[in-house]
Length: 128
Image (cartoon, rainbow, N blue to C red; front, side, top):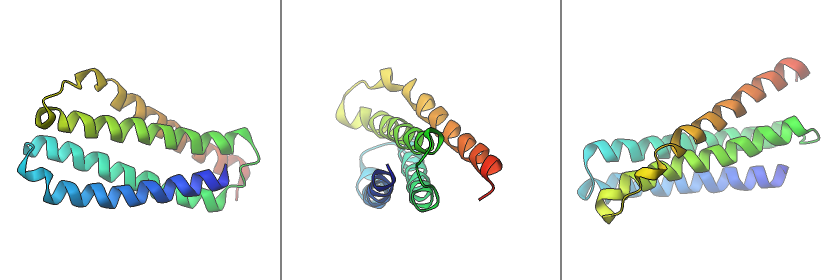
C-alpha cells in the first residue's frame, strides 16, 4: 500500500501540472471563465491530494486498517472529485451532458474530508 500511495501521489502531481498547463493555455479559448475556474479547482485539489499522498506515503507504515484507509479514501475521493469536475467543465465544449456527475463531486470531496479526519485521529492517537 505504501508504494501504491507514493506512485498515485506522484501520478496525481504530474497530471496536475499537465492539466493545469492545458487549462491555462488551451482551455481558456474553448470553455467559459466559470467552467475554467471549476477545472482549475479540480487541478488544485488534485495537487493538494498528490502532496498529501506523498507525505503520508513516507510517514505512515500502512500496518493498520486505519493507515490504509487514509490513503484509499484520498486516492478514490480525489479521483471522483477532480475527474467529475474535469468532465463537467468540458461538457459544453464536447457537446455532452455530464450533469449526472454532479452528485459525484461532493461525494469525492466527502471522502477526501474523511481521509483528513482519519489522519487527524491517527496523529492524535499515535503521537508520531
